[in-house]
Image (cartoon, rainbow, N blue to C red; front, side):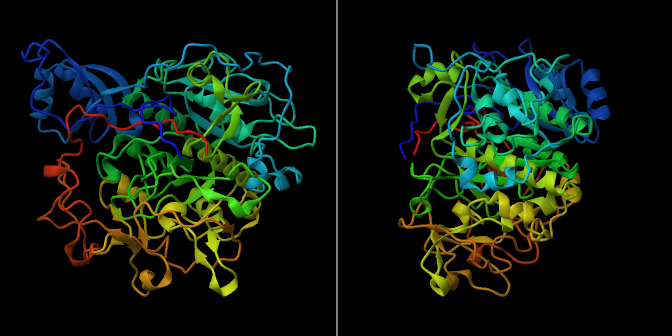
Length: 592
């Protein structure tokens, strides 16, 4: 893989967020106290009403009501901030820094069609066949009746995105979190950035080849477009949270069962204290199946981003067919795909899906088209790689499974998809070994057909209690560990993963010759065994450290080892390195 470190693009986007834990004072460029230069903050408390009253009482200006996290975003002066901090209320503060993408690259117009009508020829995009979704399409399982909310940059109203398999308009709602406005017509709006359209078309495109093969994974599903990034790829943390808040509030009205989050921000806190993660946990609690990108910072360990580091949701890494979709023996893990474990010791990603040189719909003249015109391969088809694209594949599979058995809850659906996945293995019969670590491939390559008919539903999120996690009563850690040699492994009560081939050296990619096995037996407890409970003593001030003890009932880190020779976030500060870059939303990577 060839990383392009100088280009950060739309969701291909960059979350350049200066969310830092609060300093006591903010200064203007001339060094004077910024009493007259208000700044934007996210403030959380016991309830939205309590926080709203406190902020208004201080004279602050509320810009976003974020009920999903019992908070608001508000513009405050240094004096107003100090008053709130000294109010005696149980409030948490985060700076709502800028979220933006890099400037546009290139100068010419893209080669893609700007025509949303029927003047085009559909070509085979292959990924539906790679995950056996085409078998389900032939049975009439297309995701019909299931709503997928795509939180991204908007939508191009191309026919493949606009119409479902029955020729009906699939667009049910369009909400702009930046302006806090819902369009009176879901057919309005656009996607001048390009990324949202690419992602959505992978999930649902109803374009059909001459051979009768659909381009998208769930071509019968309907769409809810939720825009959190503008035409320049800019937004704020508050915009993303407000977008999730709207999805949660309108889930029943628009029959939202799946939410696609094709972005990944570098963690700056424990999973439960990140404001986006807090909102995503509520969405999962409300039975919205959340699918998130692992991130594009692989192949190194502990590079899973936010919100993919949440233990509850489905986090997706990327594989590539090596440009030979008919030959699975040369498939490989994409080298850019982020790997686990998370800082809290959880195995991530849960699965991998096609994410190399993926073809999707992008409008000519969009930011993607202007920046990378050479990646148009056929009229409106744009080639792009990333875990964003792999995430869209799994969102489509979730819709297929929910159409077939709509009664399944989110934990059961996660188990169905994971336990039906096919890990990459080397060898034959009883001599099979994993080609890639569980920290790289999770349970393996998703299989839509197997997931739909799979009846294993009790293997995911066991021992986790999301209600307690959201309330701050309990938090959890996984079983991942690292030995003195620097290798990562899974620790269990009755197993030794070091003796079973589950040890992984950071960044190591194994030999070619992979076979996606449908017969590999996962030992119960390797990837999804019972979590550890975090120690008490978190408190309303966010103190993560209780006399230095990270874990209750036993230290998961053998011989006292910690990941970074000390505290991950010094002095208990959630957002460290004041005003530094939060992370990038799925940086651009060259196709592989």
